[in-house]
Image (cartoon, rainbow, N blue to C red):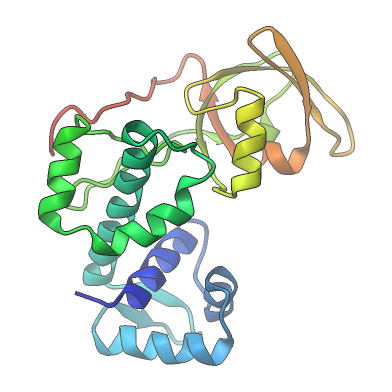
Length: 229
């Protein structure tokens, strides 16, 4: 099993690769470490057969690396679900706690947690939880900032797990599964006026960009996976 540090690198590379080709500089920013530290750690990952480096320096996960990344992501998101659903912690304070727990969960404990919580399929922030065999659901949707006035959508997930952002969205009642109506969109990248229940709020574009939504007519995300794949 890779060390906790290598697991965190695999997780970071996987998440960065969901957006574009991954460069060492991006990994340094995501991990909060220096470029030489990243270079050394990438060498360790490559020696273990967990990543490949292309001619232009881009970093790609191998099949083993991808499985390792999904395994740590699964442990992290199961830990978040446990902290929120069982221990009653707020969704804005569980990310860092789950980072500590994820490295200590054995496969046996993971499976027991999953059964105990009735097979959750998303974390408290709406991100899909990979299954034990590495399958992960593909979610539809796009950022709220791209929705036009008059449209009603449902929140799928919150891209950024920053505690302050999550606390703010919680105060507005904006969680995965919440219906949101866009009442007005200010020009020149101004705020969106949104309706949540009976309340209206002005939501900045930077915040709206981090809220992934889907149309009300789209597939509704279930809270449980309904069994193992």
